[in-house]
Length: 326
Image (cartoon, rainbow, N blue to C red; front, top):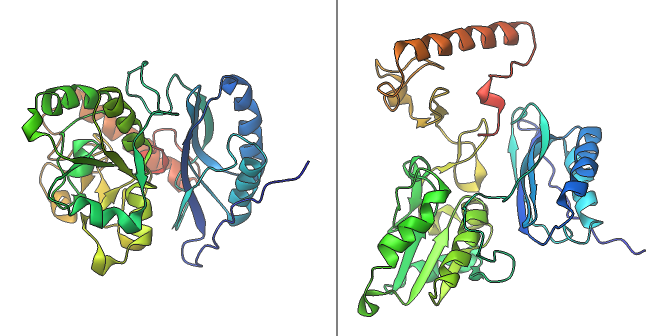
């Protein structure tokens, strides 16, 4: 049988030798439970770390490893017909972004809680990063950020609407409340949506299409592909892009950002926020100081103590969220 040509993994710079790959695809996987052990074994054999989700609606993952390890995964995808056209977004890190490899079985590859939509066949139109600016600059285009409010807080496209959700499951209610109540004369000609890697905004378009909205678009490859593709001097992006690994955020060119993370509430933090008297590494910050009591903070302090001891011994600690997919 003729093999498909595998995507070639880019070579990592000497100072950031770990390759990070983010990918997804909505595709019918009725046998996803049978795919799981094969994919888990392949990743472990190659030395890949990260998390891959499998469901009847497809695959979604972020993983890291050496150039050779990630190329093995791309070869695997190329020879599995349903995954052959997966288009990963690659970036680089100084050290491993994760410390374990898990291929998990889920009811959805991104949780929206809307079983009647069709994210495989009934979605909006892709817009390539090179054409995104032209679309969102049109006055009759409504631009919607489908991410959560803590992600939006550190960066978004200029003029984008923030639904202020705390989870993607809240997005349908926001659509029904905000868009569903618009009069015909108030409805935008176009609706353009975006998210980090493309998966949430693609599924969001399925919800809007199912609600009868027309001219629905989503950014192909998400913010990550836009930051990788569009020159900074032509960009409509403002700020950093939150990512779900130890880098916390990335900038144009997918360079690592300047944010740290509160490992108690997982909010991105600036250096100025870390100077707050409410900040204690691994224990609290100004965002969560009022949401945990002293008993919680004592538990967090003990966790931090054990993490430091494990690092000193050169070991991994299960509570070390710096190296976990969040």
